[in-house]
Length: 203
Image (cartoon, rainbow, N blue to C red; front, side, top):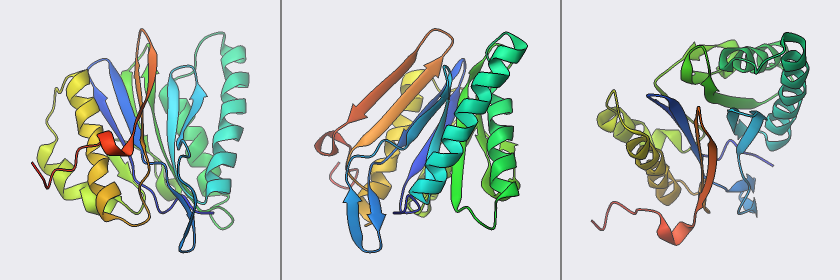
């Protein structure tokens, strides 16, 4: 089963982050799961968005979740978002011949606030927003044009919902949209049903 046929997106706002994903999982030409949540919690205020092989991406997330729990107990405080992204990057690079997965890591910590990291093939880079999965090619132009520095939390939530552009066009993306909003005070999870997503072309 593949998550490569996926659209994932994360963006920083002042004080936090928003992550989003579609929910379709495919095996070849068949859709095997219409409502998989591709946003996986790594720690209280750190999540990752999964793409690539479903088994590989979920395994990386579970291993990093365990390592962060141990790390958190050792240092006596919540881990940094960069620490989580570094663990993902290290596993992805060490097993790059065996694993096929791309994870976007995003979250909030006391030192640097909201952060988004891309971790593709051993790369580790902080970005104001990151897009991944097969559907990314359908939304890159739109998000490049629409992104502005200093967007509010609500604006960033609307920005992430633009992944519905890919869900409409990419046959391998679809289903419902999962959103996670993280800031200092709370972690909010939300599901937007397919018929509630914006369609853009009929506006």
